[in-house]
Image (cartoon, rainbow, N blue to C red):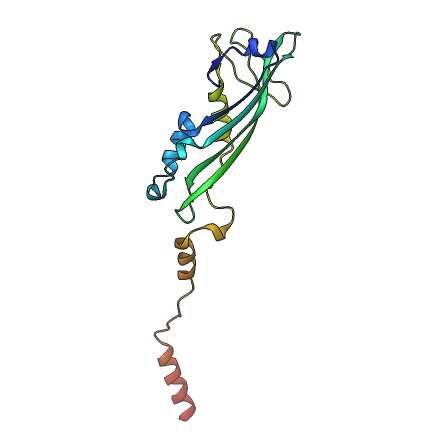
Length: 187
């Protein structure tokens, strides 16, 4: 259902699309997961490619400058991705959510963005909705992939923190200083 569609037809009918796509059926999200899991491949969930990407999209015509109607798409997408925590190098589940708001004009019509909307120009053959959804979900990925709750990091991170205690400072001339001090008092 999230394949190539003609947005003007969906907008004219004010369609609402709800779909759940397996994570493995996506292009860029699945590649992102594969890249993010290279450090913990031994912990990889066997069924991650079946994890759901849930999408709800609503279509309607929106009037832009000049009074022309342009297809508009609003909605929401959510997915959970298995990735590697950059702090502990263990497996973690990254929950992503994205609000979607696009004007979908064809290249000839063009359109300036309305407040709250971005523009995704189509080529007359339609638009692959899954591309738009993947783009928005990838834009919601945080800069650092780490467990939000540090206590969920596996033992490696906690062991590293325990090893970071300051070692005893050794002063090689400390004994000489004490000896000189003793001689100064005695003599």
